[in-house]
Amino acid sequence: MATREATQFAFRAQKEIGVCNAPPARDSAVALPSKPTEEVRSLVYSTNGQRLAWSLPDHVHIADAHSLAPFAQIASPGVLDVRFSPKGTYLVTWERLARAADAEPMQNLKVWDATTGALCGGFVQPSFAATALQWTDDEKYCAKLFAGQVRFYTPEAMSKPALTLQLEGIAAFSLSPGLSPSVAVFVPERKSKPALVRMYALGSFASPVANKSFFKAERVEFFWHRLGTNVLVLTHTDVDKTGRSYYGESSLYFMAAAGNFDCRVPLDREGPIHDVTWSPTEKEFAVVYGFMPAKTALFNHRVEVTFDFGVAPRNFVRFNPHGRVVAIAGFGNLSGQVDLWDRKTLKKLCSLDAHGASFCEWSPDGRYLMAATLSPRLRVDNGIRIWHYSGSLVYNKEISELYQVDWRPAPATLFPQRSALSPVPDG
Image (cartoon, rainbow, N blue to C red):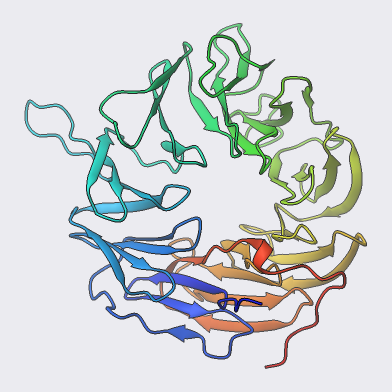
């Protein structure tokens, strides 16, 4: 049997970056061959976990995530954010928009070949958004929103679009994962006309395969099932006209990419929708909703409630990568308590105290939950804590002015799920 690499995570603080082997590894810190001496402005792993990139004031450094040896360098000063394409072939950088006197704005959202460092193309993007440039999983196309259009480019020829989806009033779009991508577009409500979401098969834009219209929708978030077969559409308004909520109103809709089923998700409590997540292994999803204390419920692919986790001050929910353990937590202005549930038995395993956390994510092997207190939200007690899903705290490190931490991605198939949940490892 092939030897697995230890799970790892990387962090970025004001004065340092670091890579650590995660529990159950005994030796935590991993030495960087060339540790940066300047401010690191962003840090990101490729989705496949093969590369690690960080931006410095005058260039972007790309390293092999296994050896941490230098892989490539991009001489682009002022980069504030970096993102990899799905396979790690390309790197997308963003810098503040600059405009020379009496000239057009300069391209500040750029796509680079992550191996050679060559510039593939660029766009004007006034403000940063993680969804500004979206990719198909096979990296055949990347897509960007323009006025009334979504334009699709091939990385080899980014000077003009290969495909264009036109629809007046588009305010947002989302590309699905999967082998046969779909494109969902959102048009906000205007005057007496309802808002709408339309779904198209990529490249077939003459008519949508699915269409849903609704009121009380000024902006939306899209949550795709990992296969791209279904999408949850979370709608928001900035103002609750009833006056009951300071955060506006929200609703949740289910749409099948095949166009054969859609509905509003029935929620039996009034109030905001705090969080939504799909199971990574099943066609089911969890929703945290309602005025505090909020309710968390599990729904199947027919949008039927299959389990009620109860009512508690919670606003966060995540399945582990195997879909076996569910974390339900209350962060922000809540206490930071995290409840871990066994999805198979539907019994609560334990509760954790992650007070002050502003980041929470499962490890790739599905056995450990990380919570971190980050700046600038909180500038005191910054650090990283990791628990085994049995509830045992196995890692605790304070890091001054910690800005970011992320697990190194790895497929869950490298870590087979046992029929019984494993105990805390020795050491």
